Image (cartoon, rainbow, N blue to C red; front, side, top):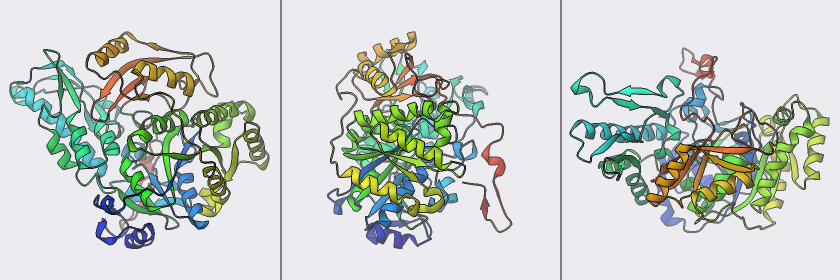
Length: 531
C-alpha cells in the first residue's frame, strides 16, 4: 500500500485538509470545499440485476472500473459505502470488493474503520436515551407512550432485539414500554449523515427527526427533546469523508452506509461531490438492483446533491441469470432486460458488465453478449476480480464511449407529486407492477402524511432485493403482480417517506453458519477471514 499522503497527492488533495487515521486512512476536512469550487467529473452509477443472496460483484466492478480508467490515462475516483458489521459477520461477509479489485486496508474498513458507524449508533441511541429520560422525569411534552416511533440501534444482526420490553426494574428503571432495535445502517441518522452537505445542514436535519406524537396529537422532534445539538456533536468527525486506496493505488472515498433495501443505498453526498471536484470520472456504487439503489439515486439522491449522471453500468453474472431462469439463460435474461429498460427510461446510456466467474463457459458468455446486443445494450466481459484494472479495460472503454453520448437524465416522478402517486409510478414503471395496494395501517399513514404536510416528500421504498416485485419468490421478470404498502414512515430529518413493502426486517438475524465462524487472529495479531 502507498501512504495516505501519496494517495491524497494523487487525488489532488492538499495536505492541509488531510486528517490521517494511521498510515493508510484519512478523513478530509470539509474546508476543502472552500478551495474546490467547481465540479469537473462525469458521474458513473454502478447498479446490478436482481441479485442472488451472495451479490453479483458491484463493488468489485466499481473498483475495477476506476482502476481501468486510471490505466487509460483518466483520473478516476471510486466512492463506496462503509460496510456494516451485521453483513460482515452474517452471510455476505465484507464489502470492500474482491481479488485484485479491493479497497485497502480491507480488514480495517470492514471492521471499525474511522468510527463513523459507531458515531451513528451513539447519536441514535442518545436520542433514544433522552426520550426515555424525558418520560421518566415527568413527560413535560405530554408524549403519548403508545405513539413513540424512535427505536434503539445496533450495528449487528441480532433477531432477539426485534421486539423488546424496556423500563423494567422498578421506579428507578424508567417507564416500562415496548420497544425494538434496528440495525444502525437503517437509522435515519445514517441517512442524514449520507445526505447532509455541511454542518449547518446536518444540524437542521437532526432537529427535524420525528420521535413521537403527543397526547394532543402534535409531532415531537429531536429538537423538542433538546437532543439535536449533542447528536451533531457526536457526528462532527463522522461527517468528514474517508480517503483510502484500491489495490492499484487508485484514490477511493468510503463514506456512510445506508442499506438499499431499507434506505437510499449509496455513499455520502459529500464524498461524491468532493470526488466530482477532484477527478474526470467518479464511479459510485448503488445497492442491489436498478429497482432499489439506482432508482433511489436517480429520483432522490441526484436531486438532493444536484448530480448529473452521465452513464450507468449494470453488473450481471451467469450465476444470477441462471438463478432467475431456473437454469435457462434465455429465460433468466428477462430480468436483465427489465433492468436495462429501467436505465433507458431514465434516458441514460446502459453498459452491461458481465462479471466473469471461473466456471463460466465461453459459450454462456457469448450467449449473454448476444442477448444484450439484441436489446440494444453495449456489453463487456469484466474480469476485475482476477485481473484488477486490466480485466476491466474493455468495460472502461465502453463507459467512456457511453459518456460521450451526453444524455440528460429523466426522472420517474415529479418532485411535487403526492406520495401515493410517486409510489404508483415507481411500482408500475420501475418494477413492472400492475398496481399498488395499501393495508389499513398504510391508509391511516397516508392521512397522517396529509395532515402534517408530508404528503409530497420523496419516497424511499423498502422491499426485497431478490425480486423486481415485493415477493422474493417471484424471480425473473414477474408480470401481472401488485405490490402492497404495509406502512409509511416519515423520516423528517432525512426528508423522505419510507414505504414498507413485503416483509423487510429492519434488523436481520445471523444465519446458521455465519461468516463470523471463519474469522480469527494469529498470535501476532494478524486478522484472517474478514473479506
